[in-house]
Length: 309
Length: 179
Image 1 (tube, rainbow over the protein chains, first blue to last red):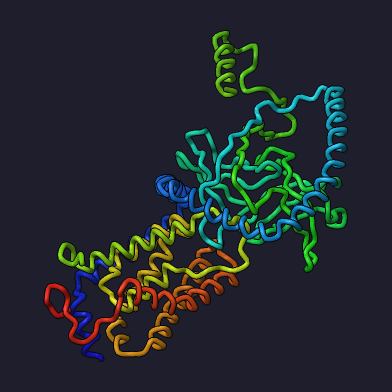
Image 2 (cartoon, each protein chain N blue to C red; image 1 turned 90 degrees about the horizontal axis):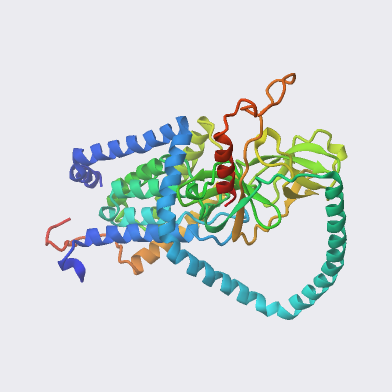
């Protein structure tokens, strides 16, 4: 047997061993470069994904569709029971709809009374989910809008109801959304009605942990969790979910967005607010109206139009 | 057979690449977005090792390294580290292949298992030293276990479907040369 092994070594030869060494050095080099200068390599990764995943797209959509049809087919077996459940829920929903309409009218009246201006710049781009992270350890999805559509890192992604995640990694045609459940996700939130500030921390489970609550005795399960906008991370007031307590007594958030079926995501365009650096200064626009020369005003109007259109 | 046009080794290398791309495709399908309770097997690793033990010439290290690096990039893993470990693991098994040829499947399984365990531990240790966020320990252990359990099936499929068999004594390659 020893002779066998010796022969194998002869056969592979010094050239192959050199190749092996160079290959290992290259791979470990890439890893070290990634550790040292992560943003650059991550940008490269986003470009690779941007190139590769759209070329799978023609096959991905039908296969995903077929699997989903099969899954739905299984649910036909319990159709009668589902139908009953839906009727009951519909009944409840009607009651809620009535309440919501009344509240909406009241809200409109109050907003009108207060003369509130909602931020007109908060618009969104909608994208379709193309692929998921492909690994059980990372929770992210890839959507089909990217730098071409003006998507930037750090913007918020929502489904119809609540926050889903945060853009991290933008290619030309694709962008990656790190979901709230990913272990690297940290989102500053406020808990209503007590107004406590906290951080929700993804831990690869369906309900992320709520941590760093200022006064934990003031929050209770069922409280609403909204983004706080601290640190300029997100616009404030996006719905995240409701508080819940797990059997171990930790506070977690039950996410409102429907993670079971993420199909369309809306990415909110958010623009940076003024940074308040020292408390005593006057807050002013970067160029004062008096010092502005007349040509810039039409330009600004045009730019605003282009943005809206 | 296509042997007349292309050497069989090149056909099998292309098949290996195609299988890896198909597995990547299955991984990327957007079917489940909720965090899983369990981690499925790393089929690419099982496939690579099953082939490396049987026919080392079908999985050259360069191909394994490039495929693993591509998977690292696509699956959001730290790029390069797992690829380097895959190359080391494959090379170890290739060196042992001639010894394993005469032994039973249990010996081969044990040998593959030891490589996989060492690779998983090394991966976690290196990531911990460099203070990189890593997956929960339970999930990686589960992935390791399920890969080990899936290994015999993969080995059987490669044997039965793709004809990746150990060389028998006296086998000749198409050119009529002794391998």
